Amino acid sequence: MSETESLVNMLVAVRNALLQAVDAINQYINSKAPPTIKAEEFKASFPEELRQLLHFEEQGAVLIVKPKAYLGAENFAKVADVVRKHNGRYVSQGKESHFEVPLTAMKTL
Image (cartoon, rainbow, N blue to C red; front, side):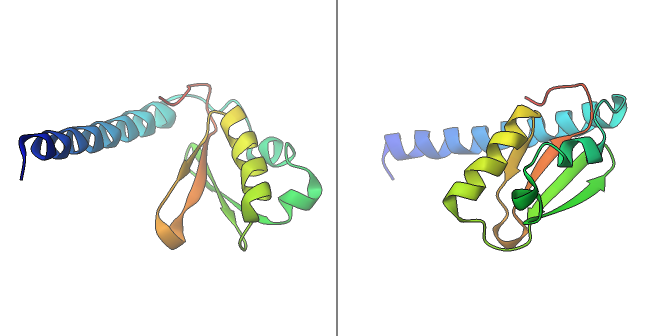
């Protein structure tokens, strides 16, 4: 393995560790901050035809949004846009991939 490959591998490992730390910090912050948006208010920010394609589940101070079926690129982009406007993010986990939206005033990093 070349010196460049070793450096890249080390940087990837550092990045992954930092991402895990950021997730842990965000979970802690979101668990301590008071709710500022209700799940129903967030759901209402989607057009009805898009809302029908999604499953919503509260998990503590986070709202989990999962598609009921494949959304396609256009609908995925629409959902991602609404989620980002509410300081949410997409979590890629294969078949368990979902969107997470904090129900608190704190912004995620």
